[in-house]
Length: 206
View 1 (tube, rainbow, N blue to C red):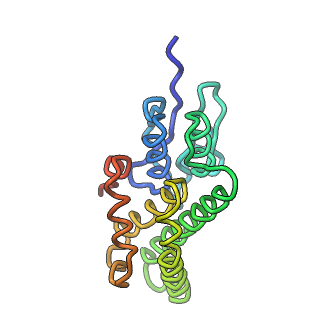
View 2 (view 1 turned 120 degrees about the vertical axis):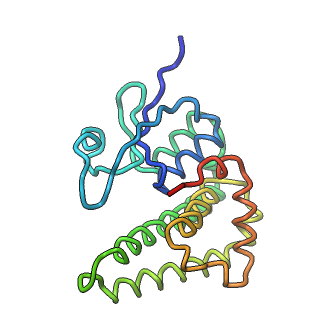
């Protein structure tokens, strides 16, 4: 009997969905997913999506037994566990990978909030928030630059995936930031990550 596919509430522009899709490709679980195009915005909750996820967010994964998982960190770890791969390593390497995942996801959260604030019309737009989001983003990039030696030495993990998706979202939504001008090795590391088929196949498009 063919295993029942899992249904993934999916959006081609969501960096959190991209993270899940990268993991699905890396773990070989991609053929077990049926993607459902789902619109989820900050300002308009989706009633259909809320039947599966009360927060009205993507990604949301419906398992074959009708149980539901969210958010991206949980879904990614579930796929990794099902495939018995090692994107979520054990021992000391686990905490390093999870910390990098937290840095990447936190950077994504900041970028998303920053983008929404930039799109607000004057005078509702807050200069203080814009400055805070910019400051946090630059700080995260500097931290990531300092982490590069350890990042390069560590086995490919969920941390690398989260950070790669965050930098990709900067390119997609905040190209004017031009984060590559720092002159460090971060741009080269990112270009190498982007050569992986999982990242190539999930590049967001306007």
